[in-house]
Each structure stands twice: as C-alpha cells, then as structure tokens.
Length: 248
Length: 53
Image 1 (cartoon, rainbow over the protein chains, first blue to last red):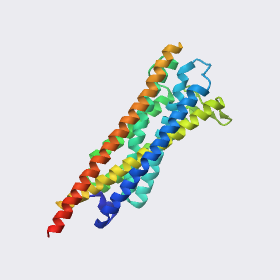
Image 2: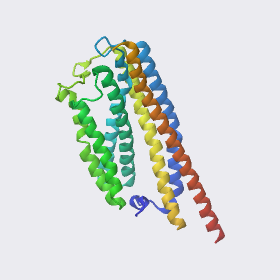
Image 3: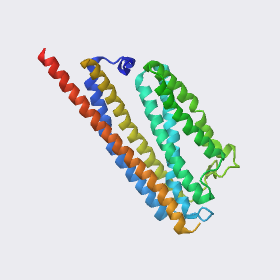
Image 4: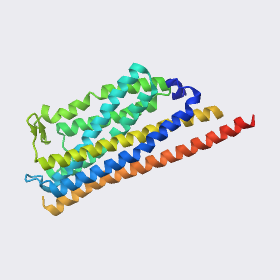
C-alpha cells in the first residue's frame, strides 16, 4: 500500500513538522470544545428557563428543538465541508483534502445518527410515532445511508490515490441529497415537519430564536473542535506509517 | 401529551447527545494519546539506531 505521505509529496524530513502541526491542532481543540460546551449549556438554559413553552400540540417536547435542529444543521455543514474538500482534492490531488473530506464525513455521520435518534424520540413525543415516511425524514435517512456507503467504498479500494479519488467523487455525488434534505419541507410541504425559517423570517418567538442560535453556535464549535482532533489523529497515523516504513 | 411524559422524551434526547459527544471526545483523546506515545517510541528507536551507526 502506498503511503499517503507520497501522495502529498512531503519530504521525509518533515515528519517532526507534521507532528508539531498535529499537536498544535490538538492543543487548540480543548479551547474550542470548552467554548462549544459553554454555548451548548447556555443554549439549554435559555431554551428551558427563558424561552416560552410551545403552546401548540408539541408542548414541552418542543424543547428538543434546541439541540435536534443544530445537530441536523451541523451534520449538513459537515457534509458541505466534505464536498468542498473533495472538489479541492480532485483539483490538487493534495492528500490533506482527502483527510479533511474523510474526517468531515465521519463527523457528519456521527451528527446524522444523533439527528435520527433524537428525531425519532421527538417524533414519538410530538406525533405519536417513532418513524414516518415523510420527505424530511426519508431524505435524511438517504443522506445517512449514502455517507455510510462512503466508508464502504473507502474500505474496498486498496491503493490510496484511487481510493481518495473515488471517495472524493462519491462525496460530491452524495452531496446532491443535502440541499434536497434541507429544502424538503419547502419543496414538499405536505410532510409532518413544519417550515420554521421562511422568507419572512423565523416563525418563532425571539427568545426561541436566540436559544436556538446559541445552541447552533455551540454545535458548530463542537464540530470544528472535533474536526481538529480528528485531523490530528490522521496526521499522527500518517507519521506512524512513515516511521514504521523507515524502521523496516 | 402530559408534561411528566414529555419530560422523559426531552431528557432522553438531550442525554443521548451529551453522552454520545462525551464518549466520542474521550475516545478521540485516548486515540491521540496512544498514537503520540507510539510515535515517540518509534522516534526514540530510530534515534538509537541512527546513533549506533
């Protein structure tokens, strides 16, 4: 198997620099993760103690909104990052974009699984069913299955250059479903999901909106923090592979 | 849905996200630590080998 180091064309002497860069990424991650935790905790407090309880049929279960929707938006953001990284990889063949794409899909998938689980819980509380074949749920399930396929594809191609190219192509094609999922409630309004953000603004109390935005910021910071940790892990794996090769 | 019932669903949803995130972060931190240790050991081995030549 070809080393990813040869893909980047990085000289052998850069191992220490690679490690330093990887450690620097990890070192900055705790700050990001702490900020994320603070924002998420503040979002929960605002959502539970300040924002009004929904007066419609959802009632108290609407509180799931402050985490469920930010997790969903962050999952789609992660797939967006993977899309951009994949385009950049195909243009430059630089392995760092392949790593960024892979790590983004991994985190996007993690967030997607959390969306599906919390969505099912919310569905049971609000609609009385764990699952409904309605546009938003169905398109999101397709997103999850597509990006799970991304890792099946990666594990089935041995040679690194081909694997990275195929994975980048797959991530670009899979991304087609992301805007469809995002717009599903607008394109097919007959579904169970309400349209909250319309052209005339957010259809919610300003306190709900603030709690949501704080949680959204927290979830985005969490994604960036985890992304940095995962990229550092991948760099360390590359360095390990290189060192083992040198030792024979 | 009565409040007492809704609270269970809300608690379950929030718990799953917090617990999953914390577990993921712990696992990632452990992976980083293990990889750093292995890289350090290999670097030391390499230094010794090159020093003995």
